[in-house]
Image (cartoon, rainbow, N blue to C red; front, side, top):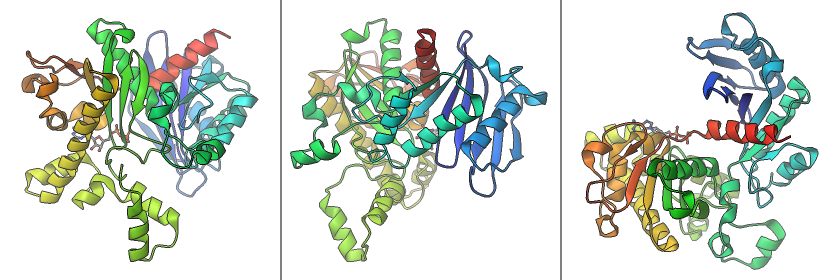
Length: 399
Ligand code: ADP
């Protein structure tokens, strides 16, 4: 099948066209500045150079139509017509407690995504716009929604409840939901495959470390806890997000800094905090390593806070599961940075977690466990788009 995978943002649209039989990506690209001046499209057909153009797009549907033109005509073509595309899979941020798996998009599903907008106010409207844009540009092609929250729906209530007045849960569905579920699901399943075990036999801690980072406890193939919460702000300190802090800090800062609007405070916690704030240098981990190596104490502090937090989650999730068989590192930082991996597990030898530094310095899917390590430590590149394409294929094939 040929499946178009879409990740729609408020003014952007990322896409990949998969051939699921061969596993090949036929084309991928990005429409930027949709609905605002300066529209730009990047399209990379497999094996060819990236084609770029300035292209004004009033709506996401304009973007999809242009992408389809690029995929079907001229030197950028990878298929002969739109009818070759069998289905579209969408990344949707928040499925609330309504979705525990991927689903075919129906009018009821669109309504449910709308109902989840208060939980994902920045992303869900954009994700829905992407679905509606495909309907507009591609007619009644089957579409599938794949939720970032779905994998975490197996968490027990004592893991997902916040200890605040119960009526907030009843009235507003306030609880932990978790994100990056597609990635945690994929790498935990890959870990079992790599180790030649059934997912049911393993207790795995998956560390998705990128710009946004989250950690997940996967017991017997099911998520039992995860570090992100109602929103992606909870958990580890991230590129620009604060992660966990005492909620009373908000009032203190707002009073002393004369901030009267809570949304301004949340913007600070989402966009101006994390390792960016701790280092005062950058949210990009490559910059932080370069700065630390040149003697920056603040870059060192930021990296230390990050790895210390990862270590605490690994320990606490091992406790939550009553053991751990495997720790997986994935995403931009987790896959590429040997030093973060090494620092994050330093001191966990007492739990049987020990890595081999030579193996740790290799790339790709690798087992970096030391010869005397009892817990397997793996690096597994994540592939959320591939999961979206596979889920879409499975659902559409069963129609
Ligand atoms: P997201 O999908 O959350 O935007 P990614 O998973 O692509 O993020 O990760 C982006 C992060 O990965 C950036 O902070 C970048 O610095 C980091 N990264 C990528 N390559 C390396 C590397 N070789 N060493 C350290 N960090 C890296």
